[in-house]
Image (cartoon, rainbow, N blue to C red):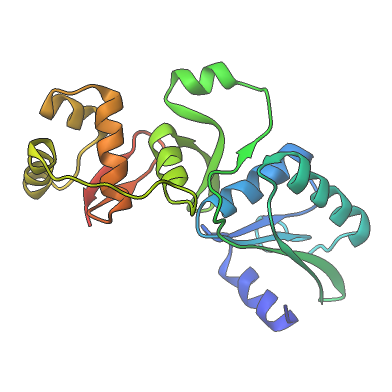
Length: 220
């Protein structure tokens, strides 16, 4: 990456595809950021830049890269693929990791902290996505959609029946629906409702939006 392009990225600030780190901040933290980017649209993890865009550089790019490599290979399942550049800008060495959107989603953080708590509130343990400028835990439905989008996923078999028609009619009137609203609307189990929504997202008929409170679906 050229210094000019790096400056442009820094000036635009953090986003769903760009994350700044002043320095290596621990294996789990770095792996979580890489996982979130790989699970979403891909992007850049830039080490040597403060959250406010101040360029501080790194003291030893080799040491930092060695730590990042360990995070990518041993703290993510499956390991994260990435390219790395050392870019000199404003007399500082900055590490730029380009992380492509992964074809083998979802990547999971290999950790043991708060697993029970995450499951109790509807999140999928170890799976993270980018949401704006932050990396956040993915819901079970988001994780299922990620898994269903992989190249090894079984062929999509889609039938539009009464429950799907009821969903489309509801979305036409109200604009959005949650998993629990859908389940109650058509009087089916949560598991069946989730499978139905995942298939419709995969087919491109509806879209899944995620936020801090609850996921919801809209017509595409």
